[in-house]
Picture 1 (cartoon, rainbow, N blue to C red):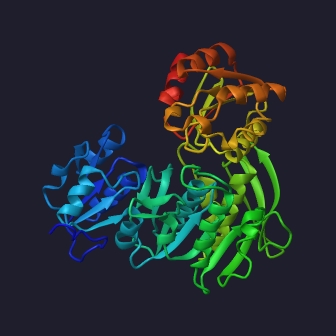
Picture 2 (tube, one colour):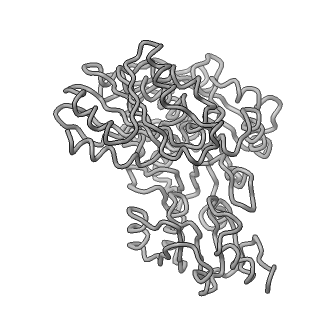
Picture 3 (cartoon, helix red, strand yellow):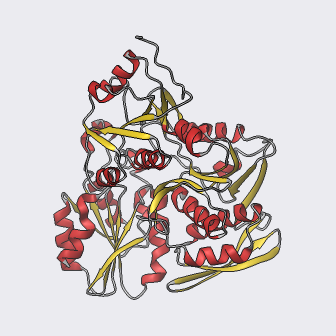
Length: 474
């Protein structure tokens, strides 16, 4: 059977194996499939808590490390994660023995989205929060949605759900799909409504430049059928250049007067933010939320537009926004000790860092914002943003920058310099500090911080459990 392996999902699938199952998306997919009564196994190079414990509790058999023998039970389908290379021993055995295989988005389409209307949320920023709000509004409105989201939605304590309703909410990632499909994941979804929040250069490991990113999003827009709806943010020139002369129905949301959905008056009364929504020149409603920052209000505004198209009443939207608890790692308060707040946030792109600091400032006006940043993404560890990061911290009172933890993965000539960033921040008059290790940051924060301060920890990784260690030290 050598060479007969096919990128096809066959009929009558019962046994499914996932290679690289411990990633956030792949782990959620494994759980979805288990909940749908498939026999699910998985393997990963590093099987560790909390994902490993979660999968085992679900009854999913986990295999430590990658090996040809992991496929000895001859699964009906192998789902290959995008971090898996073609020389992976399981991939080699999969091809040798002629097993059927697919990517994660292919599997989602077949098993989760089949027979449903897909609501796709895309963009460089805000995908997780926006798709989380949308899933919660649909749920509170009684529409019983299914979803797959790139972060844990606190209201559901999960990043996936299998519902009986008509809608499947999915966070559409522009990252590549698999070793056999280098196109972005979002191209796999045929959405009835698509939200596009923003377009900026990111993922420097797979995109050459901004034009390459725009081309990818342009391909997505180009495949939207004429009768389907695209909802876009009005404050993004990169989006504006891509939506001209498109066949699909397009609506804009944001701050501009001529947009279909406009963010009106906003005022903050901690812990609430109140905001007006204007639909085609008329007040649609006044809403309140515990989300912070204009960027999050715009995320909510895009969802309000989607919900209205799905005939969700404004009263149901309002109730859902009031009770929305957010997504984990998005301005998530991890604890308060001695009046000092420790907050976790996923921000890593310069724009996200800037907007996050600006967003939390009004809610902690009695103290200082101490921003702690770990550059660890494939983009932030490269010098592509070296000259942009300094302005991102303008609103912070004190800035702590760590050494990138995985810098040896980046070619020497392309590496980002945390020390250079600190020097640039000091030239801007900022109280900035460089640290070689996490414990040094903790020691500094324990000594420096005082009641009323916000310690804003920004990283897309675990940051060596700095949050819990810091709370314990305080």
